[in-house]
Picture 1 (cartoon, protein in one colour):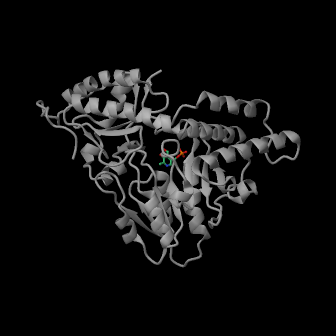
Picture 2 (cartoon, rainbow, N blue to C red):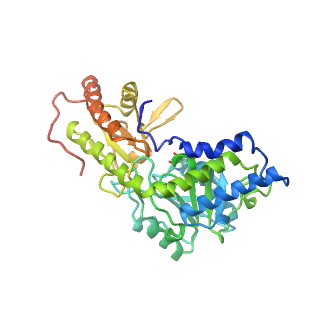
Length: 395
Ligand code: PLP
């Protein structure tokens, strides 16, 4: 098994989650809407999972709408608010560093005449309250800002943004896909009307997520076809996956504090060892508050893509923030938004640690990564042969 440092892409399914799911794949396969007793057992299991997911974020069970994942939750939140609004002109405030599930949904709405302001972050990847305030106008019908950024790990001031939204009486959506299980979350404290979660980011299965919908929120469903999930998300419930998400939510509550401290120490050890041993590297978002597990590093003289491949060959799984579209590797929109140039954005890698990451793995990675970087740099025509060894971290 490689040293897996890509937990922001996805996490392994916790063995206890798998154990909880298996009976619902094998024997208890009934449709949760069926009246017979097997159906009632499936319904009870879905209800129990709903309670666990609600408890993880301080919500009421009736406020949880299960979806097929974070992408669908983001789509339902944004499209649902826009569809429910009968304002003649509609305006959304979001940010330049959102996940594509939010960005591309907003971009699609722009084509239908909805105006969108994409607030830029500062150089550390943080959205300022002033820039959100400046974006407000009479037509604003939704503010959508993520909690933790998937590439940088930076944590946005969402309680304060929630306050701005409440004062202006504008619905507030939070994409919390990368913060659930890493940070304590209370939807009432945040003041969120809508909040997206995805099970596979916190040791649950892929293909299941949820949208928290505050009781009084106005939301139109984006699918039609039945009364499942109170009509907000029709379609036969994926009972095994929902049960898995419920178990993962219970475990996340149990593990949260301990995981955060242990993983942050490992992340900090990795980061400082790499900064000491690899001249010229910069930690992106270093000066902002970040979730415990993420470090995003620019390595001048080595392309992120080559680094990921070379490290993979050495048994280390990590990632670039880049998205591959139409065969071309695009530089990360998040790194460009915090002010990196095209070349630096393409020379960055993300290491994201998790619950199963061990001290031994991090020490092994620290032993391997500098040599790989040195090799790639030696092949780079752009990188100077003499590297200023004293260069430290970015300001
Ligand atoms: N939002 C953020 C911040 C994410 O990091 C991701 C996944 O990487 C998503 C949304 C999409 O979640 P899913 O993979 O469950 O569709």
